[in-house]
Length: 235
Image (tube, rainbow, N blue to C red; front, side, top):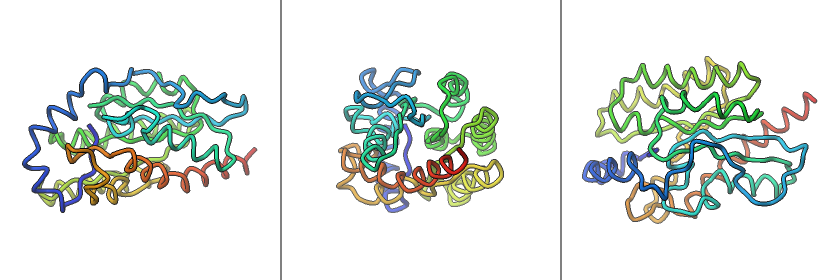
């Protein structure tokens, strides 16, 4: 499970740690996506379409929702409505970690995405994984994508302060450092706004509703449009 949880949810999250383990890290089979990327919409894809792949966890997989309501599918729809020929491949798996992302990266890159959206790390932090391991895995993913010609949109994560202010602060800074040093585009605090609004979360208090997923997708349209325009300028 991926979660970017505001410090205002800290008390609720602390009380729900058992639920995090049961729901986020061990999702029911119906909410697990296969470790293969598939187009997120049934509409015909233009042969000239730019391929965008999303390497994520339960947030990208749309835990508790139809896959068409998860942000990767919504991003595809929004970008197509704005005139961009794109195909978004959803390679998200509920419960995944940065180590899992490293293991699945080669297969995803075989689909030759021009843009890779990386939405990973929350599960690592919820399990108290060493920060250096999280950072090393994210670097390997971003660097590996770049070596294969894919540009990376890295989605930054937050943790509540009840994990300890130092750990929470250092965890958030990993994304800034990796993006800066590895040449990725960063979206800081990707889930921050949605995580502050209980109306945008499912009853578990952790995963976004369909409206929450829509808000997340809308936040990705501007940076993705800039990346698409940069690509057009180079061709």
